[in-house]
Image 1 (cartoon, helix red, strand yellow):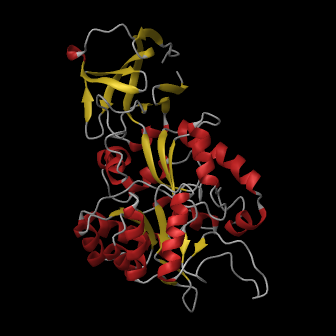
Image 2 (image 1 turned 90 degrees about the vertical axis):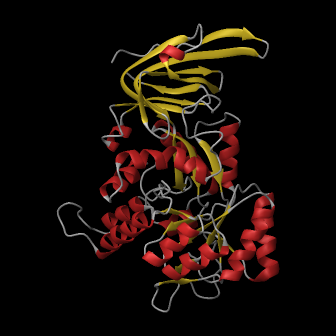
Image 3 (image 1 turned 180 degrees about the vertical axis):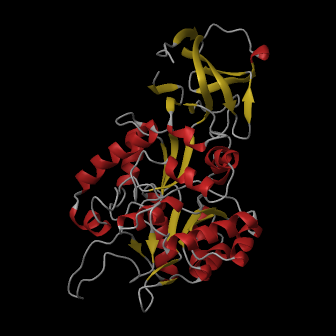
Length: 418
């Protein structure tokens, strides 16, 4: 493919300068299905037209030929940790306890740029993991143009029940910074949720369970009433709550409490997934995180039998698909390298979804789940011009999403390759 001549044509309008691009790929994924014979006209930061070339309004935009590619909405990553990097580089404990806020912020700037270059134009960050509200600062820095990255939705510190979260292993006379914020009881829970909202959280993340059982196994933490209270407080401000939950009981309590997404769900059962579907709670399975962790622990994927953790994850994901619950794309990136976000999408296909279903989940599906359906996630007039072009047809081979040739966010081109 020849080098793309991505030169904006500036036309003076009543609103000032208007950048116009006419994008001509081989095919266009509109967020729901793959189209042929379509073009996309970008005007300033939005899509002005998407449809058959025969219906294209008269324009003088600079044409950008994209032979051999599929044009589609930018991917929406649903579960990331921009302030973490892979645990085989530095353990989670050491990142929380030993890396300075300055180092973690600088790393985060690199992380968000890597994800954007991989085609992620919107990203939901699920907790700062001991870094306070640095995620809010990273979001604001992107919005101000100080650094390059996707649109961010951030949670700030996750909320945990006292005594449940880490780092742990110190005697009772040693106080260490935690990876999340503790809260208990009616007054404290209300105060913490409101405080996080005031400090810039776009949504609230809570831990419905954690590894604090008598033998270190996952057990529920908050009661259903405690979680329902946090949901009530968050919703009164126009925000929603998501829950880390790996046990069936934690998932059940969180669902009935009114959270909007459940993360991980390793021990999910047919009954609990059906309950989630009935209550319109989406499921973010984070398949790639567990896969990465087991490899860090020595599993040689492809040459050794899969560990029980992987078998169980496949089983729970199959139950989720059979229930018809909404599937959220979100891999827990940060546990594995930023920029390798497509790893989760490939595993969703490997574990039973069709490539077209995975594309829908990563675009229009996540947009709907995150209340962004009128802004991003679809290729249609009026939407923000967050677009990517990839070589090949990812509706047939999901790994084609790794071949990113063009990245546009808000009508600005951040990447183009021949």
